[in-house]
Length: 107
Ligand SMILES: [Zn+2]
Image (cartoon, rainbow, N blue to C red; front, side, top):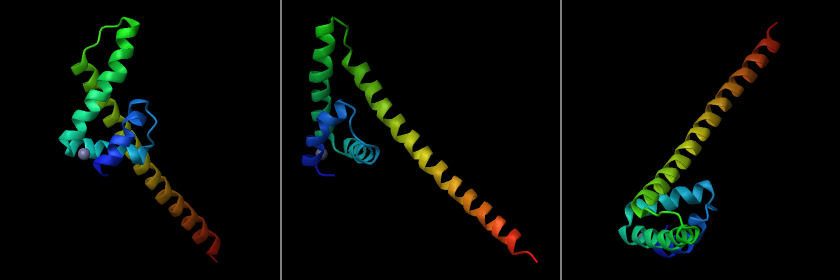
């Protein structure tokens, strides 16, 4: 993912509208690119922070940002587990089908 692509996705990220694959790339870029991370933090502060201020809620950027990143990390991890689980289910399904076929073909 390029910095330009990253920038374009920032509003989507803040609004939690990124799909899993995009989110994964987005997160990877954020981890490797300090400029974009800063850009994203500022964006997050402006959108989320202003909203909180409007509601009269206390806003602790450091804490909020930390939990946002944590949430992203968890979302990616959860999806990764689902993919792994899907893989194993497939293996088991193939095994069961092979077992039935073998059983049917027995003389
Ligand atoms: Zn970048």
